[in-house]
Image: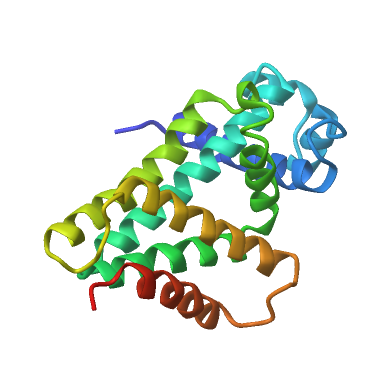
Length: 201
C-alpha cells in the first residue's frame, strides 16, 4: 500500500501538470516560463524543481500525461463496444468528448503532432509511441472486422491512422468554431463518412 506522502506527491505533481498545460496553451512553449507555471499551480518556483528539472521536462510530462489519459479513456470505451461499427464510433466519440473537456490540452497536442514532419526530433519517443499505440489499437479492430467480413479493409494500419487523423481534423474544426453541430451530430457525421467507405455492402 502506498504511503500518504507518496499519494500527496502524486496529487501535487498532477496539479502542476494541469497548470502547465493551461500556461503552455495560453502562451505557447517559448513564451511560457517556469515562474508562470509555478504561479498558476500556486507553488513556489523551487517546488517545481523538486519534480522537474526544466521547462522542457514539464512540457513533455504534461503532454505525455494527457496522451496517456486520452488513450486509456479511448481504449476503455472501445473495449466496452461489441461490433466493429460500435468500436469505431466509440473511438471517434471518446476523442471528441475528451478534447471538448480539455481544450487547452488539445492546443498543445495539435501543436506537437502538427510539427512531427518538420521537427521530428522535438516529439519525444514516448509521445510517438503513444501516438502509434492508439493507431495500432484501431488497426487491430479493423483487422478482426476484416477477418469476420464486416469491413473491406486490405490495409488496416493505413485505414486506422486515416480515421485517427480525420477525427483529429474534426476536433480542430470544432475548437476553431467551424462546426456548430453538437458532439453527437459530428460523431455520426464522421462515422457515417468512414463506415460507408469500409463496410461490406
